[in-house]
Image (cartoon, helix red, strand yellow):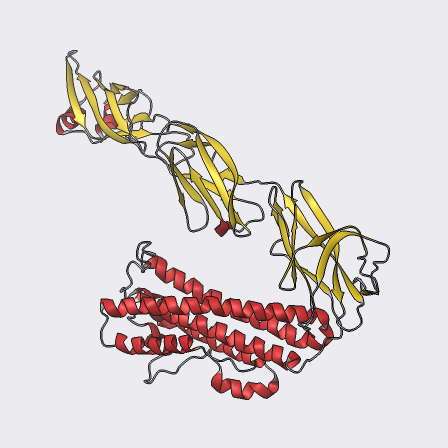
Length: 539
């Protein structure tokens, strides 16, 4: 188990990746770009398989560690360190991939391709520009992770691993820096594939380490000298109305064991030892040490426990695993206990600015479900649209004056369910106040003040949202000293030439009026605002 072997499929993917990288230097055709997508998809599939394989190895390690923690302690702790090192580098690579994909316009849902997969500037900006700072950091992280992983292996295997280890930086054939040779003027699909390949390398390296550590402890193990019942559940949090599920098994390497699982209330014969763990009970009788025992279905040697969740709160359960000896017809009972919490179906919807939404505006909304990761929470709205932002918040756009309802769903244990709804009042944006260059109220003014005015401006005062209204038209009336009244219709916010002449020549004792002021805001609704009147009291 100490030497990771590549599957034929993996070898083919690696070879095709090298071929495409060579072709890339000669010709970036659509066929080459499509081939990179195919290689990236293949490596991604391989990564999923490797992740599952690694998880299975960790699970085996965990079970054996539970049986004999003394013998497995050092190796198991190193395996956990390897998993964390792998996770950190894998996530860093994924972050850079998603950043490039986002800058390239995202993924085309119809084809699965990156929208601007031939863009050669994105990877260059990210990894090569600024003296290649990010590229050098990535190279250093890869090399550092490589050395730390190798350092976790048994000493007798470390020297050989330096040559065969999957995760490594290839030195460019010329004097160029690694980040320049790898990412300069490279199409974004090729850069993404390169990072996916490094993710594959780190998973292969992790697999190499963990199997090596596991083999160093258990490769020669033929018989277990202790068994213990273990309860494994994907989640200790259960939504009201759903079922709590857990696996109950005996951690043992003997393939002839045929365990039976029961739950109920312990009888007085069940006791804990000084270490706080339940003691194994040996008996010539098959009678389980439980009151009102209920048998649990067993599949492949694993008990499939399912418990109800009709009531909210913490729930504890107790049980035993019964194993019959294959030699003397005696029985061993391995007690266990478990606990889970049943939570009500709840959701939190918080309007960021106020408890209402406005037609025509981006109304910020935050949506969350306690105990559920943000990426597993979705929300929809009626009478409008709800757009999710990169930080997990939403913008609600309301299309009509009806109460809006947001429906929240969450994926819990692989199943999507409705967690709740929240209704909001919907209002129109307040009608703005008309002004002349910021002069709000009709007042007595000097001729000099009004002569310098240029336009009608509509302003919304004391409103929490930044909002602008556009002046569509208005009527201007001018009364001279002789009492004669002149009218002019103006289109737009700026005064036309005739009104500018009136204002330029206006004098004490005259007056000017603005009415029939029509404006339009973000809700695309035409409105008429307040009229304005100004008496000229001085020069």
